[in-house]
Structures are given as structure tokens and as C-alpha cells.
Length: 119
Image 1 (cartoon, rainbow, N blue to C red):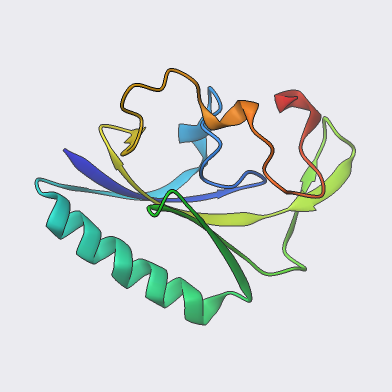
Image 2: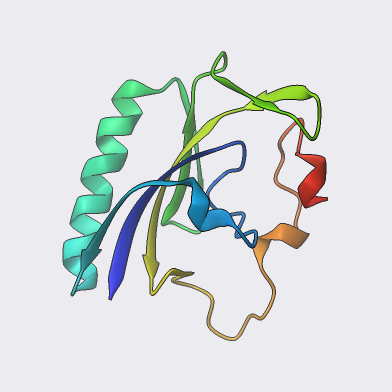
């Protein structure tokens, strides 16, 4: 089963931290990759018109944001960039997981600030 998932978080959608599913704002399930991919493309097109900036990772993980949209982090005691994520996943895992047993949390994201609770 394929899912197209929208998230809202201080983390881009390719950071699969333990509690990443708590950031889900909307989710749709599809039986075929083609149907999921078509919906994913439609949402990305819609978000491209709505947000100032975006970044794509692994083809099916996209972060959208507006520079002044911030989330206050109590643990960090500062404001962090808010990201609207769009993901196409299979059974809640990246489509390219394959043989890899690591997750994106160990790699640098390019963000100026990252919440300390995930460091």
C-alpha cells in the first residue's frame, strides 16, 4: 500500500525520527504506485504555488516553506523554520529504503538550525 502524506514540522519530511508520524496533517492511501504518484504530483504543484521555497530529496520527499513561518521549540528555546512536507511512501517507509538500514537522521540536512532533541 502506498501513502501520500502531508506533514507540518520543524523537520523536513526526509527526517524519519522516532515520532515523525505525529507530524502528519493529512494522509491518503493508494493501491498502486501510479495513482499515488499522480496525487503526489498534484499536491506538489499546488504547494509550489502556495509557498516561497522548496527542496526535493529522493524524488518523493519534498519540503515547502515560507521564510517567516516559524515554530517555537520549547526544548531549544528558539524559533525554528516550519516545513510543510509532502511524501510518497510505501507502508510508511521511503521508497528507496531497500538494503539500507540507516535513516536520514544521521545525515546533514543543510538547515541553519536543528532541534537539539534530535541531535
